[in-house]
Amino acid sequence: MSYKNNAISSDDPKAIEKLTEKLHKCETEQEFMKKVNVYYKKNGTCVGCEGVSDELAAKLDENIKQAYSWDKQPFPSYRLTNNNAEIRRLKKRIENLTATQNTEFVGWKFNGGEAVINEDKNRLQLIFDEKPSEEQRTILKSNGFRWAPSDKAWQRQLNHNAFYAANRIDFIKPESDEKPTDLQPKAPKKTEPER
Image (cartoon, rainbow, N blue to C red; front, side, top):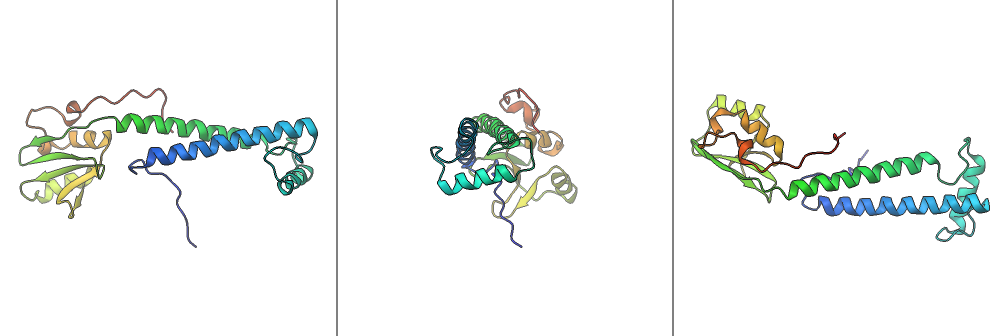
């Protein structure tokens, strides 16, 4: 059985564009469902409603007659409520991604290497002058960094958590004796917790 994943990853360069398109579809669907429900409530049928084919109108009318529900309308209340929740979620996600994309992260030099911001690949990369010891590699792995042979760097996804992880690794501490998070611009405060 094949499974198609329609999730939009935050590190996709076109994430905001895709989320905006998805938001537009949800808003259009919301307006359509509300319009059809109002028309049905006024006329007792979906036939003749603007934008609804006769075939769809007949199907919606039949569904209402067959439905075992107190909610006698073409699109039940829960569909409108769920779609509205999805609209709010998408707007919040677009807002958060826009704020993150407008954050200019900075790299640093450490004893034996350099931390580099690779915006094209959306990665925080650690480039060492020499191969890290077994113990250092274990620490890097336990903090979410993975070896990327193609880039010859230890890396992880570029986000605020990458810098918090870098704070915990003493051997990549900036030469200025600051924490990696202290070097970064401050993230905008969240108005409500993410779910």
